[in-house]
Length: 411
Image (cartoon, rainbow, N blue to C red; front, side):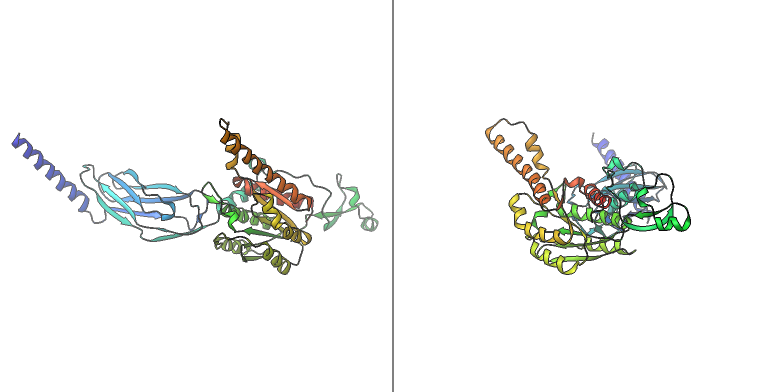
């Protein structure tokens, strides 16, 4: 067996040298490029593409290890593919960020093996690539498109019955069958010797502000995102809807003080201002100061406006501490308080109880859910509108509330 073993070793060394020559003889055996979006959308799946170009004259096996940003905490990223001889291939994967900020990609490492599969040659590309993560602009595009479709009910956007009509005059036109007889303009009718009616349109250029609480009550996580990030994503989409409805959109955030202010305007650059302001919302989740919020609104917002307040109240005691300031804001403006139901309690409430401890847990969970409904009724007593929603439905519910207020003409 001695001679046979030496023949095997010699054959192995021969193939090893041949494999080395095959892989290292070509100076540029492989080219690769990581193609990332200009910016990532927070909370959404973002496509990352890898473009490979094989210069070898034989098919190769590639093992891709991309150094993705540390925020994802992925330590076992690996893609194994085969690329045909002298051809190109595009490989893709998705990333879902859950924080705003800068995401730094490291090297794109690719280990190439020939058909012999004895050794691998490493290629490294695209060192230190930075991509910023902004609030969810993918949702913005989605709702922007469905706004013109006939399937809005599939996304939860419902039609609101109009009560009366708005009083912003548009034009005088000739009467046609179906026009409201109550809008007849008798002076114009006498001059033209034919029936003329006044035509009205939805009131425009109304100011809408989104106030985002970035205090500790917004730190609660849901599906990887904090409630603050859900509120930021919703505010971005709602701003786009407001501007499409010819109203003026503005926003600010508050905790210990009021920051990230964008005054309500209707300019072409307004969405970019709002996007940059939301990107820069940073917080240490302090206790929110509602007295400072009340004073700031009193000082800086002189015209009656719609103020949509994104916050969270878990108990009646938490609401009662801030209720005097909310009532003060509601005297001068139309206030809508948007807060969240605790979806984690549903699993406890719906779970079948078998022990005394589980019975106690279920009763306490039902008490917290009941307090949420009490908060809605308490706000309603003082003329404050409210939206109690789950985090995943926040954007749709906020849009529906805004459209309802516009349709009812109560601003």
